[in-house]
Length: 459
Image (cartoon, rainbow, N blue to C red; front, top):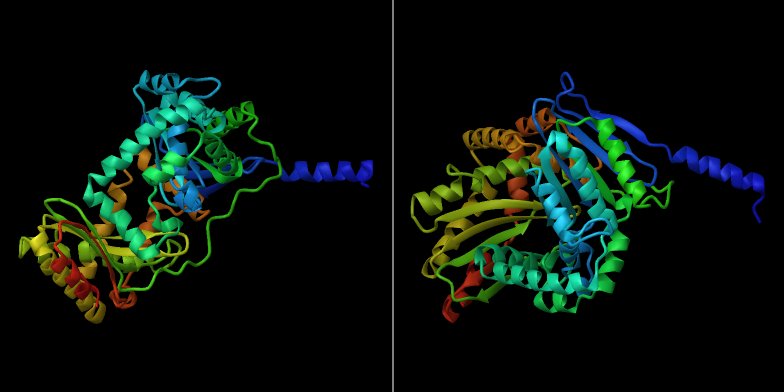
């Protein structure tokens, strides 16, 4: 039994922990580019980046849940839920939600990834309180009615069909399965026809309550904003919804761990009656927290990140074997992927794959020239800055950084990390990543004899 004095002490201790904490994470120049974070009682984090020179603001809420948090039976639930949060709350119908943002000329949308989900609205700075109220209402007060689940099921099945009609998109889902197998990272974000048809309103509601607790959310806002006002407005919206049920709760930590990918040398082929064959040749990459990611970014840019890249020059410019050819990296909390994509005529698949494999092997053994590394660093620096020229991109950067890393990095620091990459750093990461035996995914109208030869590309 606890005495009254012990209860009072415990309550006082809990209240002491439940004080909002505000920190300046990046100090800008004359207030421009300043990033602040406030952690509210209940574990909700709010980060803002101030840009007084613009007339817009983008407000978003990031949820620490993605398709990798789903069981096989729940595959597609995160994306399904993303749709349903737009269907209405106790205060607003689906039409009210969309009309509120439309009538001020704003934009509102959402996206689901493998490790997070984001809901956002971009508006004039004067309309930011409206955007905050609408998005917070959606996130805290969704009704998830049976009839809405049934209606939206049809829209999601159409979205799955649309993706399957685009083999250039679908091949990346196939490659994820090739590399990760039948686990959460290997399954499609949208789910499948069977799993989406099997999801019920009750199961989605339970998923919603489990993963949309304030401790799993990060609020991010960028533009001509005042941090203190944003905090007050967000706090009022969450308190109105009675969302803070555990005042002493702490934010969830960024994901961690280590995931092993499937054995190398795997080949998966999906026969489709398409005009082109779509191929992804790749291997394990780096987790997003790996310090070598900066060197891998330079390597990726030099190999397949632009018109002067090796793959573009060898496959398209010199031989005209493909219109689209590029390389890319995907970093998750505990692992990553490096891939090369190309779309070409089915009769040219083996030629394209041989060129790509030869280039990867050559760079793994000999590295890139100093000139290539320097050019890639310059390109990566420029694209990094140009990609942050609007408030939506800035909101994405600070929101994802808080959710995935638990910290913020200024643009100047990012550019410095890119500039510090040396040719030796790039050669080292090339030996490790590109020296691994690759796996291969192909979608297209390949004949049996052509398909049987695909294993030569990963031998």
